[in-house]
Length: 281
Image (cartoon, rainbow, N blue to C red):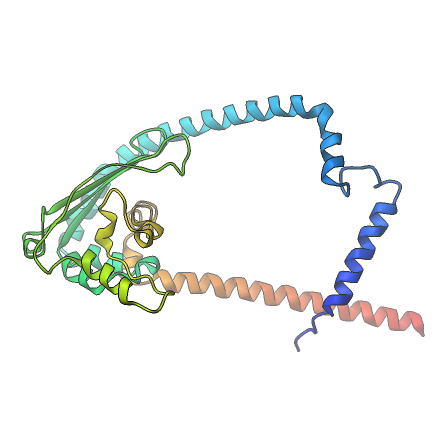
């Protein structure tokens, strides 16, 4: 049986009453817990210089830690290379492997349909990750000869560089694609967005990412991060379309935990109510 939600007005009144009690409590009044922003600033002022110095020390240690982590990461990136070569040798035997992995990623669900015949000719993806201490990277896509019916060249590469600010992404270089007449999925995506009345669906082309300044829709898609952080490290679940099932299982587990907690709370409330009734008797 579902527990009835408490009346919102009663809940707000109880919160206000609790706040007043705290403010009137001599042990709480004058502390930083319930004071105003101005009072909080005044309490902090005598210690501000010391706290700023401590924070600077912590920040320096964090930066040193990040540098050491990157050294270890690059060491293991090198160790992974021969293993990744073995993986690619197997992938070479599976037609359309990378195309299917990309299509099955939940965030790539709105790729324009004109992308698909081209991505079917994607033979391999190569990632040169963590090029510098800021985590810059290069991604290279190699297509088979049949892709010449759509575009040239057959090898597309993009180099993305980060600086001190992890949000300061800079496209250092990107391969310019020459599309055969009437074969550009980028033009198809732009035309569909221009004529689409449904603002909730922003259809994009995978190949819009191969520009120095992608469209707003393509920028939100973050193709590079999706590949380097998710698909590249474990492509098989995407090929088998198991990722959505995993997410659903996680959601169900969380839902079950919430229900268990709610049931436990209900039982506790019922037991507490029984004790109150006995006390009244």
